[in-house]
Image (cartoon, rainbow, N blue to C red; front, side, top):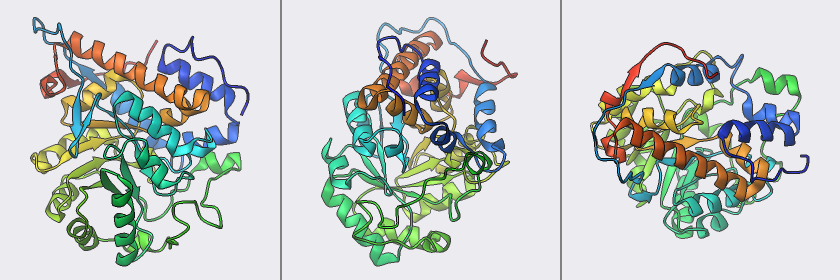
Length: 356
């Protein structure tokens, strides 16, 4: 990476994205930006968000706007969480620990990726009881139990099981750039003591999820849900959270966007679990549309990488500050004094309207 820029003139997310492209090695930028195949799903995530319009409701008292919410019992100062990204260390040496520090400062949570280069306990120690731990099923039930016990002892608030990637997606942009991140031969610091076997990702089933929910005292969220049927099944398994995600469009090309799936998932869950969503979200107004359709929290992935790339903890903190400001202003101007006041009545499908 080239020298990081001064953050004083970073006022918008577009500036964050632009600066990140300037300072990141092109192949590393392509790795994070790439979607599965031709990138249709990644594009669809953004295009679908662009087609959603916010509908302001007038003459509500918005003299005080409250952006607080919660997810699986953890209070959040804003409805934005940091989605799990295994290779944050490509963009800042602080890796997941740096992300957790930025999240803690902002009063929100990070989902620490199991394959991070950071020590798991160091991530949890930034704010015990605040952050979540993401797991790929890469071992048998004893392996899962050992991981769950370790992260519980470390002080993580809950477990997030990613189920949308039994096989890693084939990404044209990464293939063309010549770079693809993978687990080092010796493993990462966290996973090295446990070992791992990719084949278990193909064998993990609803029965295993139900077993994990019953086995651990930690609340469990399942990440990668895109249908009402799967959402209902997850709740029956005992999850406390359902995380709508298509992995940022990185696993299945020509898939549905997450915002299109959100309403069906929320309806199927019927309030029995908290709902989160990610994939394509970069702006506060987009986050507000997801809140209106029933999400309690919205995860950011790529823009998390870009924030770390331009300034480490300070760069990512700047991203969260910008989003907080955008969300607060948007809520005031659509007549929503708090997060729960944003309802489906504030959201409507509309025509494409690219930024100018």
